[in-house]
Structure formats: C-alpha cells, structure tokens
Length: 289
Image 1 (cartoon, rainbow, N blue to C red):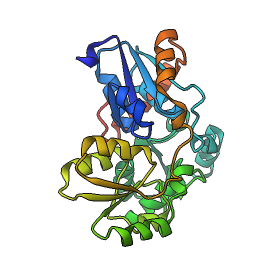
Image 2 (image 1 turned 180 degrees about the vertical axis):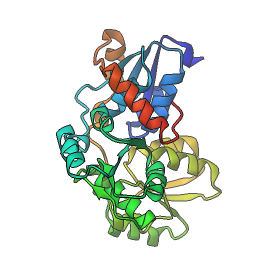
Image 3 (image 1 turned 180 degrees about the horizontal axis):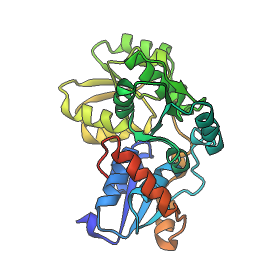
C-alpha cells in the first residue's frame, strides 16, 4: 500500500493537475493533514502552501514534513499578524475567538477554537457573547449570513476567490440553467447568495461524487475542477472564473516534488507546544485529531 512507504506525497485540491496525479493522496487541507497523521510514513511531502504544511506538521508530531515549493506563501494568512490578534484579544477580552482552519498555526494558537467553516457556523450559533472569526473576512461574512449574528472579522481575504464575480456566475447560470452552483465560503457574499450549496473544496468533491446532478458551476479556485473531473468524469463542470487561479499553488510541479524527495529540502518546523495547542483547539470543535 502506498501509505506504508517511508514517504508519502499529499496534494491540495487546488494543485495543478499533474501534481494531483502523482500524489498518494489529494484532498482539502484538513483531509491531507489527517491522512498524513494516520499513515505510517516517516516523511510527508506537502504539495500546497505554507499554512497547509504547518497544519500537517501540527497533526503529525514525530514526522518530517517537507513543503515542495518553499516560496508558496499564502497572501491571505500574511494579512493578519499574530500581534494584531493579540491586540484584538486585549480590546475584546470577553469575545470568543474562532480560528478558521486556513490560517498559520501562530494565528490559530491564539484562538479559543479551531474549525472548518461548518464548525464556525455551529460555534457562532451556540455562542452567547461576541465572536471574532479569523483570518478570512469573507468566511466571517458567510457565518454572519447563515447565523444572522454579528461576527467580528479581520480584513484578510483569498485573492483567487475574491476575483469571482456574480456577473460571471449569472452568465453561466443562463448558459447552463440545469447546473448546480457550488461556491467556496471564501467567495464574496454576492456570489455566495447565488449558490445552491456553500462548500469547501473537500465538500465540493464529495458532493459531486454523491449527488445525481450532472452539471456544476464551480465558484472556487480552478484547481478543484481537475479533482472533480477525476472523481466524476461523466459529469460536466464549469469554472465560475478562469481568473480564480492561485499563483502560489501553481509554484509546485513534479520536478520540485522529486527534488524535495531527493534532497529532503523545505522542512517545516513547528514548536511542539504549538502543535499540542492547535490539536487541542481542533478537538474542542469536534475534529478528531
């Protein structure tokens, strides 16, 4: 079995098609991190961006974690510095701080819970006082839209998802009236309002596998369409925008993965106490790690 080798390759759903094909496992960031934590390999090569590699490292203590493209630094997570979170905590000492899973571990460890967007909806719905959701402002807006509760957010955003416009989605709906609209929670609110389902990339892939629907308009980073076509080749997928492409995910290619395996370069280090803290916060939101 592949997972019994001494090294495994995990690739995010947003990775280029050729990278997804060579990976031992392809999925969302949390899916990849959970797979890495449960396999027997001592080395994990991450095809993705920096905070995904940190999440893999946090969930896989004792394993060597390598980032295939060391310069794949997510711009969104760079928009919120840990010091900003600390200042927010000082200003809002009674608030519940919820960390969206797509964040640096140094941001997540300053929160009270770490969860997916679905977990955030549940946490905010159950909270009695003020809630802060970090780092993505669009996810905070989505949670606010669903729960009808005010959520304090930061000003960070995912550039590829924000490039998707309602005009593009509406044009595709006219061209493909039977297609279901799937939108990522990091999209802008006026795009989310056009969606039949709001799902992260892992949820989208699982949805198209299970549903009887045959056509989908995909308001998400374009790489996920490769994964969808691989899982459901008989169905049709229409990317909402060709501009929704993450340049950081495109930094990984098969040659970089090979060099990483040969040189054991790009090792990602996370302090043991930070790893423990992040796992604890994830368990607090029902994630089995």
